[in-house]
Image 1 (spheres, rainbow, N blue to C red):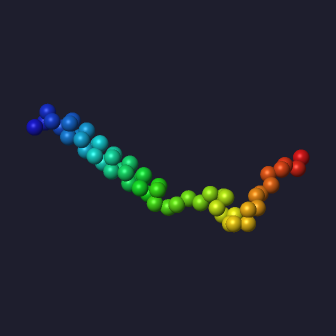
Image 2: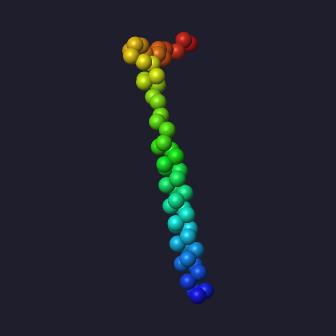
Image 3: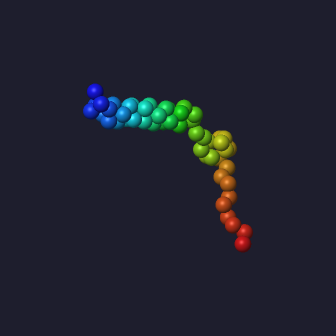
Length: 53
């Protein structure tokens, strides 16, 4: 039925758009990010951020 074609295209757009968004979200959260505090180790030393003008 040609009258139902726009509904079919809209359904396919939402379906593949949702799959695309889920794919991107899952790929974003797969790898754990490291913070600079955790890369310093257990020494407890902090980086000095004093500017020498």
